[in-house]
Image 1 (cartoon, rainbow, N blue to C red):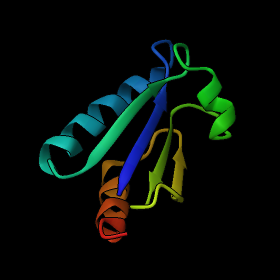
Image 2: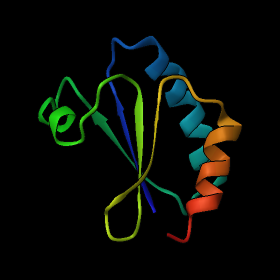
Image 3: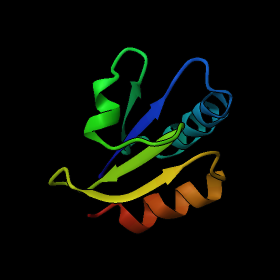
Image 4: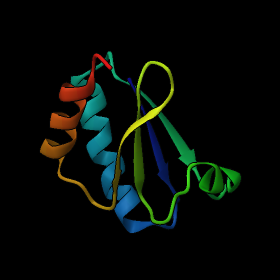
Length: 88
């Protein structure tokens, strides 16, 4: 499983979520994540149909979307989703 994290430097909630993701990534070092800044990579917004920031797309081993969150999400919610989908 891999998580794509979409954000922007001017996005307040993106900064908050960035700190939460750092904690999660430290606690679950096996988790693969990739940050995509939409200012540097605007075509990714169209490709992944991102409508709001921050957005987080969970991909399975084949690279297909299995879950999506947008906005300020509690750490516990993210951890639950990660653990429930880690083998997909």
